[in-house]
Length: 429
Image 1 (tube, one colour):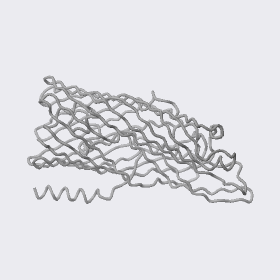
Image 2 (cartoon, rainbow, N blue to C red):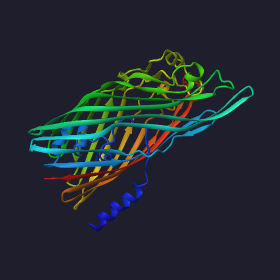
Image 3 (cartoon, one colour):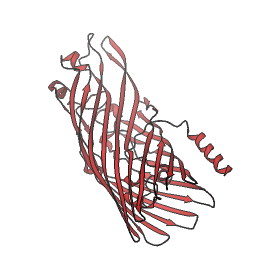
Image 4 (cartoon, one colour):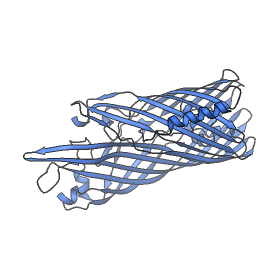
């Protein structure tokens, strides 16, 4: 037991200072799932994982509650072909999820959970030196893209012999905030060379998750998962001083847009190599190529709508429309859990994760690329308490963009992230 506690203290000392946001478009689940590749469709990781595969809820014990907290130390890099280098901020952003579950019978389990389904956050320090004739100006801007989708889900699993099905209706709360600069072609002494723009929108959406698990024999378990796509009509406000100073329009206007999230299909297998060693293999396919090809914003002011319909030569951003011609993606991963005699288990995982980005959709608001994920973690059980911990590290593929909307967004994009996570489960019995 002393060795177990020393292992956990060392783990916490390594991970306590790891904080930041990140540019991933998938949920960060409990620590056990993260340590075994982040998918883990055929495994058991409590009620939170039931949003990914609600059939896995059948493996929970009696009555219980769970709580997970994680964070990300991430960095996006963008190197323009003129050798100017941008590095994103490392903002502190916690990821919290949790839930409750109940055993109605040995073959019927129910639960309710909360988790951030998507927490996409990219923020850059951005300054630009403008010069025109005898004028010059150095301006600093906010430049970020923050998309948070919170999932609230009751779930239920039903076992029929060696076969289990699960269902989870899901309510999604969506918040989206954008900030970016826009250059002023009519720059003169009485106005600015560039202006800050900020959008804030929110909305709700509804979907569902379905899952199935089959225990083929004592060594092999197979699983399937389906998460429905969903869409939401977002409403909010946009603000900037640009058109109030140049065109006598309002500095704050109402905006509307639509956001679509795709259908996602998953499959997994669990194989007990021995009484101490278990292997899981998982694959996920996301239909990002079937969602909206652009996010179009409607402003209740014609001046805003008209002036934001062209591409800004500074950032490559069109303020009234964002290119989302994504491609379908695949994630493939494997995990290994070693459970020797005693209360402590050891876990390792790997995942290759594709980004939906294509050449024409890259810019500093949408910089994410393909990634290799590596993870290691532990599990500890002491009476009614279960503690899981993990550290995941992702190495992003560098992506060279040569055909962007404007030359300023051409260059090399890269990404790396460290994610520490702790999950605590308490069995009420």
